[in-house]
Image (tube, chains in turn cyan, green):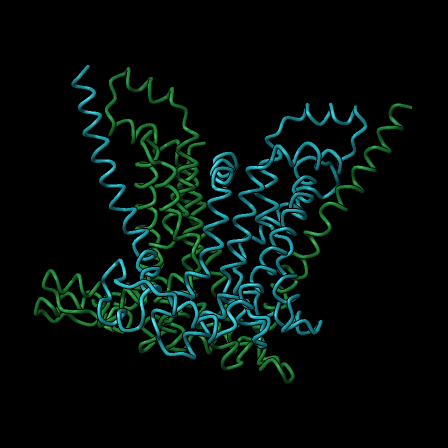
Length: 279
Length: 318
């Protein structure tokens, strides 16, 4: 009995050591980035490897705000990402429900076409999408950043897999109560589907917040650029000032961390529950 | 009366269904399906985005075939995939297995390993550029500590094997040089960035394995190694299958890491397909030419996925 306990203790200690080593590699670049953002220029050059700055300063953050319209970029990113996320939650719920629960002609082919579009790399279609947006005179507007992503095949697929797993009996009970499809979807399905909605929300927010190539292509005016593009621009114009660059990077990363921490529990549950693991 | 009622119901159901899928389908139609068709047409034209399109048949594809830069981009992309996919999958599986035990601090570990996934490629590239610096970079600092001369991580067109053997005083033929040091550095950065994503998916797959299976195996006297190969790996195979396909597709679409750090350089040593496409289309306005390269990328992804489905699909146990 004691022997087994010691064995377990040794095993767990080794496990923790391995995991901590890995975790250090994962988190170390962040810590270093944050640490650099809190040093003044002299210290960045003098003690680049000092993890805790001798003198903490927010001068880099002040300079970033002064030298590029980062607040504007931040707000732009927020507008774009929130709109896309909210819209995807809504449109994908609707279509996923139809594909999971309703009977209609051409259901299977329509679903498989949708699934097939997931295979198409974004980069193959970016030129025609640019042309289409240009045709509608939408280049250089918020619409160009938002409209193409108002719904997604991935989101539809993700939610459909989940809806399929909810027992049919629930629906029959609801229909007897005189609840229509829309009412059933919103009153019963979606509350049950919270974890998977959180998963979709995180994915679509993360994807649009971090998207770089699309704003790069469809925006010219500085006022509507998003954070990622703004950051890259900052580097081009200012040469490399590591302290400021890291300050900008930190600002760009924080919202995602906050969202992840809030939704983490639901998110993990959502991934575990769905067919995401089975393609 | 009853059957009549059902028809009305069914008709209502059809109407609701089409209303429900309409928003999604219209977006996918306008911004994915139609563009794929337009792209196919553009790839047979010479066009600079502003003037008239000129139909040139297969000329763009022929030009690509003879373009040294395109071949360089293609080989680099294959190298990148060849490095990042196996290493990434191996690491993420190991981490998922380690995290699939009941230990303290599980949620914290999970969050930390997932952290790089949440960061943007732009931000990650900045941080890594800083780590990879020639002077004052932490990586070279550590190497210096153990007596290795500094390496120009993101500015070294030499092959990785060439560099290693050179340091050992041996000259090897250039065709044995392997991918450039720059490309390897970018791969390292990507592995760091993506491992957490695959880890989470593996973790989901692992958690779906019922504990009773392990208990039964333990009673039968199966050791941990045997249990891993006879239970975990087979049951996990659909997950591994999914992760592999995703990883390959993602690896062929590598762009940001390159765009933010090296822009394909030095000497095209880190030029990858999507960056090549981007450059041709939006810097040189050779839209037809760029689109044909994009179609080749699409074809490669399709063919690779097809073979994976054929070959790996057979080994999956559902």
